[in-house]
Length: 174
Length: 188
Image (cartoon, helix red, strand yellow):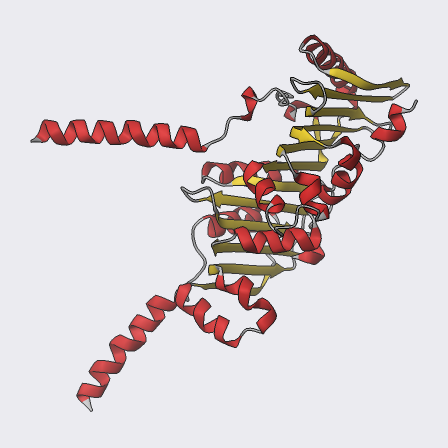
């Protein structure tokens, strides 16, 4: 009995660490905190999770065939959706602060757009081979804030999205 | 031994900085590149769109299908950079922005850019320029600057080998304002 417990406990601990099921972190947390502190405190966290490489391999085994190719190039995801956001008439100051933070953290923009009622930012990072290794999407509107960070070999993932949608990426596509 | 480590460390830092410098492509030396300068001063914060698509992403799109007749491949073939700034201008800054557009006009024409469209109507400016490549048969750069009656300004710079016949499609695909009407305005 003791031996079984001794075997199982480290296994559970390892699987927890290896799957990467942590709270969101890094630029993701920083941007989330910046936006939520500016848009009112009465938001509801609808979804928030982070998946690491092992969790992603589990997801892949259950994924529909259509998404298998796309998912195999993604090694990590952080997603947060927050409802009950109150955005100001002009959110340009917030837009500038977010952009400054992302650029300071080594992100480059691909598209960034803001208007009276919504904001969409798409940033990326490249590895030493100039392949896109991370992507960060911020989508803010009157109803909700969505944050998505993807890590992995994202060239093929982005390519598939561009071919499908062009760069005309709107809230509804995210 | 400590000196050897120090020397190795300095060489490593030097090599790394060179390598990083080479990785970050500097388009400012490209003949088709134009620096609009700092435009943030004119921005009124309600409607801002910025697009910055560099050669890596463009090449990725170009080589994606392996079919050179593919629509997307034809559109982006030869392009190195697509840069767009579009924003609402503060009313009190309108005059200054139009002055800035005139300055850009002088700078571009004095640097061998050909102005193919010049529309100056009350409350509305449109300028389109192309930079011809060495053989004059190819276009290596395109600059568009517009100010519309509703107070919206748009600045576009496309660097690379540009197919003018595909500009309209490129505009639709990349959601670039102001490029759709180039052909019509050319006829004016």
